[in-house]
Length: 243
Image (cartoon, rainbow, N blue to C red; front, side, top):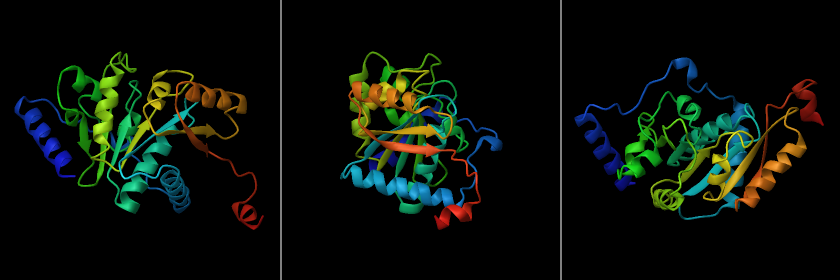
């Protein structure tokens, strides 16, 4: 990890010298809340499943995508990043690919001043678009700070930059915008090792979920599995545990 630390320090020095902000601190209310033991257990299971499906001696690239707004892709990707870093000491890069708000980074109280594609377009090191969460091994970035968002025409340059980052991070996680509202997540799926489809319990219709899966596969992506989010328990939890 020496290279990424050195590159980040150099980027910070250069940004400071020209007076540009390294990051914007968001309101505390937007930051990620402490996880429950049950959530930790589910994220641990997801972590182990991804590791078993994607054995690799280089960083794994995994995207999280929902069909519609509110499915919970942001929450799941942020929680998995937290568990991978805290529970396993993994070095994690969480990339927010939704140009509309940077919600994933906001959960950790950070917002990079520039995006990965912005840095590449200006012939700058991608490390300038990466910020560290405190003294942890969790790093955050955004795909672009341009409100137009999306994957630019030179996707091969982006793919090459992401591939280089595999050698610096154990996990590169993408929080993708809803598939029904943006094509960015589908474009990311062609670059990632696999995608996790996040389905909102009792709201996402199975036909819609299948259409997202088919769209990912048509793009050349690999659907690793489905996470059922926001499950409602209509009878007491202890009854479920006895079934």
